[in-house]
Image (cartoon, rainbow, N blue to C red; front, top):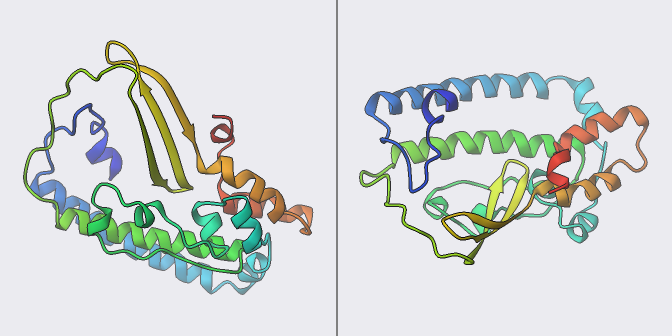
Length: 219
């Protein structure tokens, strides 16, 4: 769906021509299909007792450690940190959308999996709300020259958690400085604590439950 509809959306000043009625219909049909497939997948996962035994009480990240290390995203929310940038510092239209923030407390692989499952369901609901309530109006603004050596700071909730962006403009509409702090920068130290006391075969399971980026840690 993304590739079919939004491959050309990244343009300075706004978007290309807006969604037509046919595209809206296609999005809503795709959402309905994905919801059905997600429900089926969840049923399969939840009914596998051997799998649930494998992920429960595995790779526990204690709540206080998660707080001390500023764990963000699903890794933090699975350990009882009820924080999401879209709710705490809403941007764009998130303050007008209705959605819940998953929150679990055991901090194990099972909780991180459940957070992500619930976030998949929430994401589908958010897209549906956005499509249904999308207003008419301008979709692009003129892109004028930006004064040099001005800076901006932003917080964005990504699939892995809180993304921090800091940018400074340069001369002739160029970027002079750009710094990103990804969620992985916070969550790699948390992973080190989560693997303690577990057997070696559990490491891939714990590692992937955080879904961290190697490159993001080096930015």
